[in-house]
Every structure is written in structure tokens, then in C-alpha cells.
Length: 118
Image 1: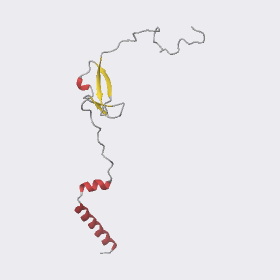
Image 2: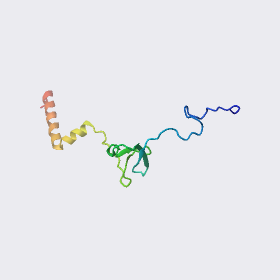
Image 3: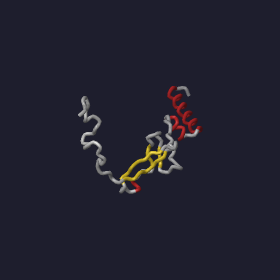
Image 4: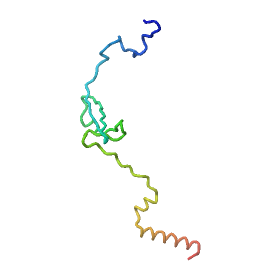
């Protein structure tokens, strides 16, 4: 050992003799490329014996966060998210302006009757 040096520093525990080339058995695998809308390619590796239907068609790209698909020419688009709707927005979807006018008139009439203003 060199003076002042540490022979263990920088090596992995259980790595074996320095310069060992074979670090174990590598299973057969298949590389699958995915592309996002910005053209970024991401490669994912799957076991060689996996059924083709078990390989996902889309993933989230680690580069951009966009969805990435297996067809480079037609990458998937970002799904549109619906903005938050208020209660009034939902009511307006169910009622026409004429129905809203009628409901408001009925409510005002009932209120005036209770107050004795009719």
C-alpha cells in the first residue's frame, strides 16, 4: 500500500479483484425507443421474454415530462386538462337562459310573498 493512500477507497464492497471484467450474468433484454413531441428519445429496456402486449405504448419522458410513444413520426400529444368549474358553470350547462330567468322570477316571487310585499 502506498504511503498515505487507502486501497479500499473508490471500490465497491464485494467487487472482487481490481480490474475484474465480468460482474455477473446479464439477462437477455430488448431495447425499446420512445419519442416525445419535442423529439427527445428515451430508451427503456425490457426482459427479452416479455410478451409484446406487456410493453407499454407510452411513457412519461424524463427529459420533458411529456408523454412519449413508440412511433417517432407521430408522438402522443399532451392530454388537455379541464379547468376547474364553479357551481355556476355546471348550472349554466344544465339550464338555458330562459329557464334561469324563470327560476329566478319564481324565487323572487316566493321571497316577496314571505315578506308580504306582493
